[in-house]
Length: 415
Image (cartoon, rainbow, N blue to C red; front, side, top):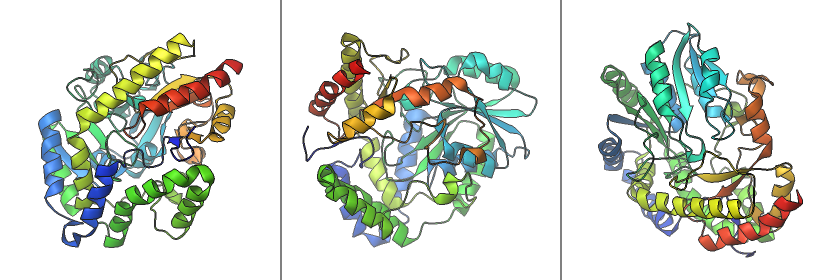
């Protein structure tokens, strides 16, 4: 393994040279950092590709909160989400005054178990959020049929995947709304930011009002977001000798790096204050949106490679994966997954991604505050303990994928 090129999920996985240079250029254009034309351009281009009306906010979780508030639902009504999800989804539901109801998953897809869904629907159910986990498509055709039969709204969570012309029809085509995220390790990255694709005209007026009333991030916060690609790219080659890890720890202590989750969010709470997506972050995301086909094709190549290797080496695979999928990461199931991650870490391979050992992720979350109780979703609980995922992000090379497979294979067979 290369000492200077760690294999990873989370060390600025989309911060390639182009994004780093754009971040530097924008940091000198202070008059364009908060507001500018990039937000409108990104909204317009996404709407042209996915249909509907697009509203951008400071993060995906804020976009979801704005949407749930715009729907004018009654406090205490229910939103069905899957087990094996991110805490920010549950937090946004709670912040909107609603109740998250967890439905178990299919282990073959890591998505909502539609056969278990009927038991979760009650007279108080109003919304179903389906997550295309790691880019594996949920069965939106069946979900939309169920929603129409029960007069429910379907929100497709596209945080892990953005559809392109080569993608499966199940993603992005049938939801009343699409939830987007442009965080640090998503399909494309603006370091932060997110949005909603709204296909229900009567809600667009309310969404526009929430967007207009949203606050700007302060200049210091946006500057720290712009520094993220270059700070991580500088520390990344030094991670294998320990210096990079120390540098990032010091930067976080000095508050030069913004955390992905606040302490309050890990404890199950979320501020109801909405923010605009900074123009600086939209500027980064817009460039990557225009390269979405390139990024998705790269992910497809790695997905096919891992599929072929997993089949030839008789690894325990997720059966719902097909070679046309631009996966955010390629999941495997193995007993003792955490032990294998620790052993690979000694070889500068870092497969911790926040989606292990927990049904409401990451593992640092106080799950008791999210509305989830142990035993609710047994398949999700089993899967999260056995899952081991392989990187497919744009800065992960095929040579690194080959190195990873060679290092992983003897550990999987010994396990």
